[in-house]
Length: 189
Image (cartoon, rainbow, N blue to C red; front, side, top):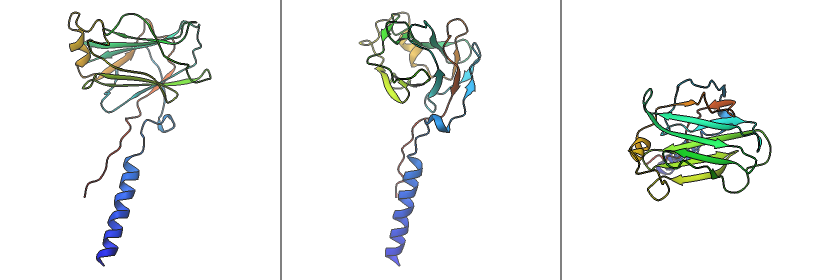
C-alpha cells in the first residue's frame, strides 16, 4: 500500500510540474487587441510581458514607441524600436539617447511579434522578435551613459504599472497582448 501511495504522489508531482512549467508567453494563447495610441494600458512587467505585432520593413522609418509609467503622468522610461534602412535599432530613453543597432539579423518575414520584458528589480530589459532574443541589457552605470543624470536611475527603478503607445511617435505597432510571464515552479513535498 505504501509503495502505491508513493507512486501516486510521484505521478501527481510530475503532472503538477508539467502543468506549472508551461510557458504563458506564447502568442498563440494570447488574445491580441488593436493598438490605440495615447491610451493608458495597465502593464505590470513583474507578471506580464508585452507582445506587439508589426509589419514594418527596414527603410520604412516606422517605430514602436512605448512610454512606461508609474501612475498617471509619472514617466519611468521609454522604449523605442526603429526600422531605418541601415537595420533595426533600439533606444532606451534615460539610459542612452542614441540609437543602437539590434545585433544580428532579425528573423525573416515582414509580420513580426515583438516581446518586451522588463524587471525593475534587476534592471534587466529584453526584446524578442518572433521568439528570438535580440536585445538583452542590464541597465547600470556601465551600460547607461545617462544613468547618473537628474535621477534617471531612480526613474527606471520605479515599478512600472502602466504604459501607452506614443501618440506622437509610434507608427509601427498594430496589435498588442499581455500574456504573462514564463512560469516554472516546482511543488515541494
